[in-house]
Length: 243
Image: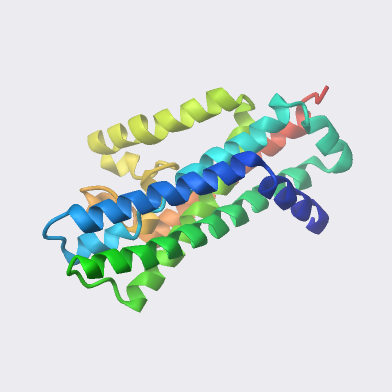
């Protein structure tokens, strides 16, 4: 597993797409934090804490996981990859772990940057930044969500195989279907894998935060989604003709 994991991490960090997504995640996160902290009026303590959850890593690593997995089929590299690693399930596991690690690492960079810049801009605007304990709480939540969504993206990309279909489907699910289901039936919608369960881990993100899953339960639900997507993708990978 170790050589496979190193190979997947090397493949990931040497692609231009990863570099573009890192830059986009940092830029968008900082833009939200700076504009909100400098332009908003009468921020409450909860508003200030929620501001530090403005980490776009989770969305980008989810899409990157889909592209990395489905891209093996689109660019016809799946054959050479499996020839180099004949145990297909181990190959998929290495890719899943690699994107989970990448998600956590990227989120660490983005969240720490947000915390530094956000604390400076909040102080300049006359607000008190969150304390060390609150910042540590925000950090582990952001890292966990990014890691889980990176792993989920690999499984979903392995199931669908078409990059375009998978990306469009995820965006529709995250921004249309899950919020709509949550608004109509929160008891069902809060189990959604791309938005609602992750926000349960974060403990923020929706007006009706009390209807979200508790963080521990939300983490278990996300692990179930990741495990289910991995199991289906692994079963399909073992049966599919690679030629």
